[in-house]
Image (tube, rainbow, N blue to C red; front, side, top):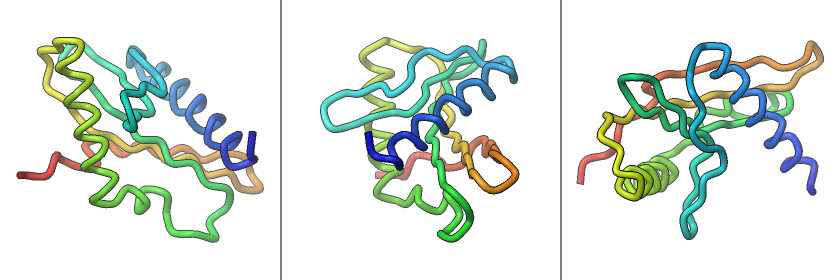
Length: 121
């Protein structure tokens, strides 16, 4: 496994652990349908939460959440719609981003609830 894939897997595991500590129930991780993938699907009593995880080593590059551009958002929303229809989920959906940055001090986790909304049209 390439080092960036290993770092990504570590970030996703840390994001799941973070969400569990906050009281979220994890429904699926790395859920795939065709060419689409959702990193984490969690739920509460009131909503379904689709979480995109971005992991980086250091801060040499743009902030991780900026990598979730319009194209990526459309893919996440399409995959989430498919997931909701497939599992007949009657809950409203929320889209979050969790960033995990590894630096000299360890890992920093930042949770951005309602990070984006589905585009119109």
